[in-house]
Image 1 (cartoon, rainbow, N blue to C red):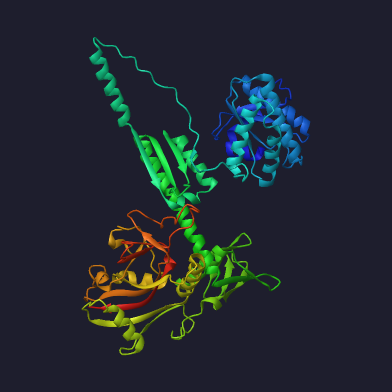
Image 2: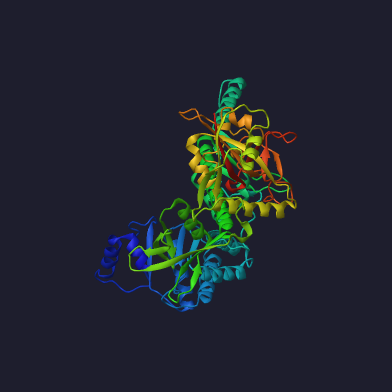
Length: 558
């Protein structure tokens, strides 16, 4: 710890130490104080390392007394003696906590009001937590300072049993002294007018914002800590309500107008990060049920990758690109086409294996031979049964159009992911009526992306204006998709997909939705599968998960 502090503080602090100990008449002492150099603290107190818990207790007490004498408000300790000193973390925890309690009891400090014990070993943190739990409640004044230390450690490491409930959580905010206006005037009317104007100015500087989003229920303790940090930096109050009893989860922000808008932007960034992580987790989980990538270790055994690396390798294979991965905490450049990975320094090479787990998501029997490819488009022969079936669907509402071609999109990864999602919906919804064949018109520039990755919301459905939510839109009537959404290319050719869509259980959509709403009050995570423009007679279905639709046929027409 001493080396880390000195390295970060810079050479000036080391020189200052040397000057103190080499000064004439210097006598060895328990501690010396220097400036903080490049560190953000005011001072550094350098102490003689101890490994005996009673001596550590005396040392902590002496440092606290020293801080009080120098009118310091806060002090931060490492877990003294638990590193190279080899002292027992449990004994050190008891000693340090006892020193703090003794200092509060005997000295009744006026200046020192914040004591932090910084621990970065998760196992050791448990020992300090146990020690503080033992002392909790012994005396009112002791309890207040112990609670502060305990809550600091809890927020850093997210102890499950000490984690505060975030349903209706009001994040702690510093209280400010009120400003007092004394008004003097010749008459009561002038005083009233001045008072009214002051109130109007105060109100004008206040703002409130409420953010409603299903992903608020997925906020982690680290995300909540980010909200606390945000509240400390800005003049705002943040209230987090994860939603109970059928209520939608929300975050309420109020305070100075400029800070409320800054806070709102930052909060939405946090929620979007949570959304991306949740989508990535769901996608990785689905792919792990279809494909297992493995690497060979020295013994010759093949070891499976974690599900996120598994997803990265599979996506790299789809794009026919290389990807950087981690094996045993070392970075490797993986060539998925050649099934090998080479360490970044070029000294190691491991073999890769892709194991297909598609038994439960077999490819359709009428598909053509892929010849080892993941994606291929096959034109249907005009007059064939398959061609006629698609043509009938396309013209079922009297759409007058000249079909140029119908192509079957064969993407093995998309199909298998779609089938796995279909099975999950059947289990979740307890019925098999989850799938519909719907239409999606689009421009020529989106075709390659949709064929490779499916109906990603970043390029699918935006032209509709998101009137029912920010998802991918599919029409019941092909004529609707042909009107404006199937944009012609320079040759006048338009494009539309006949897609398989897992609409599942659906409800009414509305602008701004990024996920479907919860079904009821039993669980905030039990959501509808899609939303519609009209629940009585849907003409449009909107999905929010990219693997809920498969682009089965691409129809080119004029």
